[in-house]
Image 1: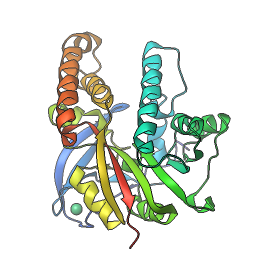
Image 2: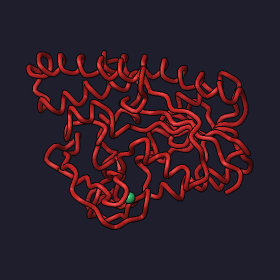
Image 3: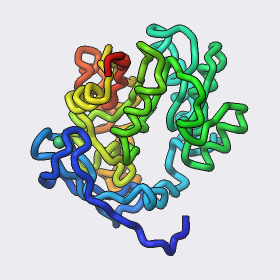
Length: 307
Ligand SMILES: [Zn+2]
């Protein structure tokens, strides 16, 4: 993107209920440029928390350019890179097993597939795989693995049995339109899997404006389970089950502690490390009994065929 182009901002209405009335919720800094702050607001009608004002769809690419943005990273030889990679492998296997409890085989579309590792896991298990990825650097890596990438949803010439979005919907400007497109693409009784940060989790309450999953201005919405239930129902889906992602409390707590300690290494490796281990352990334990407190939730939703 041309750095000389001005960043355009817009004032969206609430994604869940369409209301245009909001109140301030939190001011959060861009974790890659702490001098830039953004406003989160809360809908006065339904309670959804969202970014407002936000960069337009044209301008948002500017905020994905930091080489430290993990989902688009190449595999690295650093210790943190190796840990991230090992966790990604275990997570992908976990996600595949959860999906295969519902549907054992078929066609799958991973929307926002990043560098493609999840699709590779599915392909090895016999699935016919398709990916969509708007970030050119990540898409190139996925293509190099030999995965089929589509440039737009209209290019799919047949329906699919599963659509997955792993921490993607919160980045999408026209999210409601996209969910309706998914309804058209899915087979009857097809499965939609959405993994999203959970605004009502314990680590968000503890770290407040330093909670890493606010990730302004890349995350446009901060959903509670009730928000997602309403949005999916409006778009023709029914939630069948909810699961937590076991590594996310640890990822969130360590990165949030880093933000809270101002990336001061001494404070991070003493106070920050201890706090993050305590918080992540608490969230992990509580999530076993109640998914609603977990850092991230995977929603498994079935297509309703009457829409
Ligand atoms: Zn609302």
